Image (cartoon, rainbow, N blue to C red):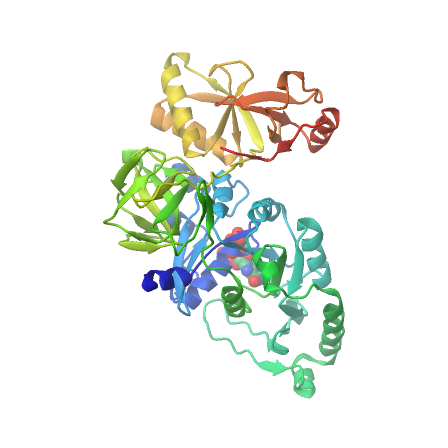
Length: 531
Ligand code: G4P
């Protein structure tokens, strides 16, 4: 048992969130470099080439040169076993990106120092806050001209509503970037450009006490500015408090430059120290402890068509407790069946390897003959519980689906229902209508193309999508107390229902949501749907 306990306690599972181009891929690459998982940075992605290698499973990906799905990377560093959950890094991210965050125990937020908090970061951040997981901030690209450091921190606090605590502090930026001041050790680490690939940089560490040496290194002006800023900072910023960090109320902030490999290893070291071991999870029988309980996991993502010829699906599971052994029998709680998981594998950047064992904190992908749904629990046969479901995240784009050949009604309904079950899209109906009028909602518009493509290629059904102007959807939290027929909204509001008959409201803008809440006292709306 102690071996299992040690294996679990050395695991760290986190997601990296950022807006496209902030440097998420570059930072991940450098992490892998330190872990020795790759020899030369650059092999995770040569932008156009290796991104394909991550998941080369769909024509759309190839055509557009993007990765629709997310992958998991595992590597060892300093006796930690680290799982990084990668999230699709372009504008058209999908609900899967949100779901990936449900499988992480903490998040690293990468921010471009010249841009501050951007749209995609804001969206993903909301999900982290909902889960109260620790969030670490890496402010990247300090080798380029950056915004004022205090302004950057202000931006995070105001935009995201989380307190910041800088662990290090930058000295200049762009051409004038001299390094960072490590507040903990009261030491300046000087900047050196390690030419993208190598580990060893020619950095110097100079204590703040060694004033003369420091001035000789960074110059009088930079020294004076740093002294002023340190004084201001000590008075103004929140004090470091690990409990607050772990509760997700305070984010430790680091500055660096992933491209030139500066500040990355320091960040990794502090991060591993401050972040959490695999977290306990809520189930219907109470909290499940990762070490005390036998094997259990939940499905957070289903990916279809990994192999086009076989129409196969892979279910991704996050192990929440105990040890998984490929030869063991497990119980699929929702299906009520005991079985062996077929072809358990670990999905790495450019390869899949069949694995024989894994521990709480790890992510495994298993072949899914069509039995798993998102949120399902799998556990050792002796146990009986289900993990709390994964919420449904609000789509932001909606379209009415028209079938071109109405003779193929059955295939159409089957296809669209299956694709919805995998969680790639959400489907809705007009109030009091059957499957005649289907409205589809997606988180990223690319999913519309995925839907069209898959219906044509897998189900031989052609559709036309008619875009609808709505951008916001809200679930009615207290639907038992509300007479939906009598709700008075704004003229642009639309009432719809999901396949289970739950009422939902569509809005064109945020203002209409506020207005509707004003007009219907007692109405409670939510951005997340509970399954
Ligand atoms: P993403 O995954 O968040 O989308 O970002 P990615 O790492 O792909 O980085 C986006 C661009 O920013 C890349 O340049 C990358 O080289 C650059 N970059 C990342 N970190 C830093 C940094 O610390 N400093 C500077 N100056 N640039 C950085 P690109 O030209 O768009 O792509 P590529 O041709 O280098 O692959």
